[in-house]
Image 1 (cartoon, rainbow, N blue to C red):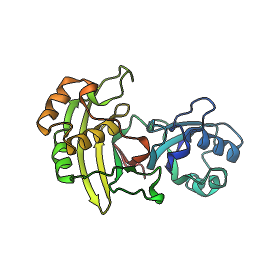
Image 2: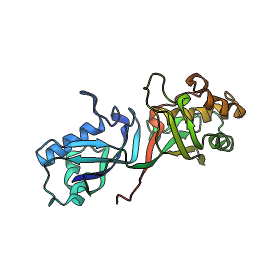
Image 3: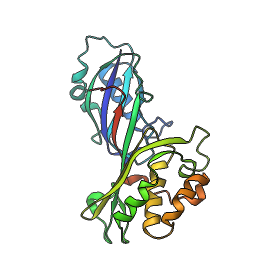
Image 4: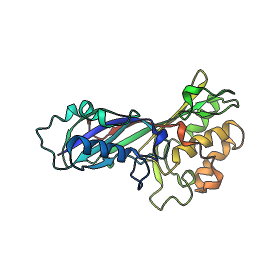
Length: 250
């Protein structure tokens, strides 16, 4: 048995989720907190490798080791919180079978990219939204986003030199919505390539600004050429918003 842990965190102070030597990461912070609570080092695995500076409103990880099954796993959020930094919170937890895989059992993930669309920054959104002071037409962005829905090879929308893993993904939905001075872009897919969400959102902004023509989008996708897609937007505007599993986990 292993414990499934639901987290939320502000990623501003971390080099992503995954442990990277001595750099501060969410995985390291959670592992250290669990060690302080249980007095033993547990194996912590995450549902995704979020980039440096990326936030999560919902993130799942599992912890496994020599833990008694009599331990009330649902009490973990209260027991571990004093060992965690304030920018990482355990929302819920419970036992799951050993057959459960926190990453490979994911059906789809939803990300949100937050754009502050005004000429003056908001101190409460520093490191939490991307300041874009030029006009944004969410109608144009939604028209462009619709071109990406479905199954495609997204090689043009991953960081150059980021690996050779398969690049075909299925986007379930992709849309932009204005909320006053902010524009929230949501995209859900069965998986994402390295920097894919940030490049997709940068492409929408480039279409909005006329840098990329709407009619050119199918050709950009088919080209598998990173140089033809849009800019990679900064990490601090990105949130892992929701994780949906093949079977209900809570």
